[in-house]
Image (tube, rainbow, N blue to C red; front, side, top):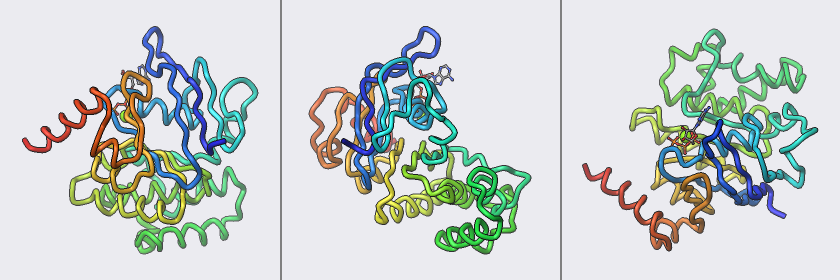
Length: 247
Ligand SMILES: Nc1ncnc2c1ncn2[C@@H]1O[C@H](COP(=O)(O)OP(=O)(O)OP(=O)(O)O)[C@@H](O)[C@H]1O
Ligand SMILES: [Mg+2]
């Protein structure tokens, strides 16, 4: 069985179907990228895996445990599945260190000292230990996004879900965030990421899934999806991305 198994899931908002019989899997230590047009369901899928959105049918299993349906402890699930969004969502009234240690102290009941020590180790690794006492609004977008990743890592998640984490950043700040993801991939962190950084997806992913109308339209190794896509809409999407870059 795969580490994450998504089996034939569907979800609608009101009458509007957003996820339509979507199935896919992620192996442990794999990095899987979700690409596809705006509105194809990438963010919704990540939110369903994190238990932020209920699904209407199908099932999701993580590490063999069914995480959807009645009787699932959503809080326990969220402790094990980290999610980072485009907008970093750091608490503005808390320092970097307070942001990173909040959940470990309140949710995991770690002693403050241990939580701070671990937070400092993580901050050091991303070169931001000197910003521990700083407030988020006095930092660059790239720095804030790196702190948001560290905040997720401080919970020692089994899986990290990343939703367009570079899309709010100025181009010169994108690479510092992608470097962290690259390092995490090398360390074997299991990650599922929605991205429109196609070059990055090609480089870092074990598998790329092209989403279209709420289901996986084509999936395969990055060389195939980017170099030799098999299906019409995948080709059309990649063509439009390349054309947009040329303008
Ligand atoms: N809270 C919501 N209420 C109603 N409709 C929603 C909600 N969130 C998303 N949708 C709709 O669901 C569809 C899928 O949205 P989703 O955000 O998953 O797409 P996406 O692939 O992440 O797009 P993007 O590339 O623009 O981030 C869209 O049509 C969107 O309008
Ligand atoms: Mg999205």
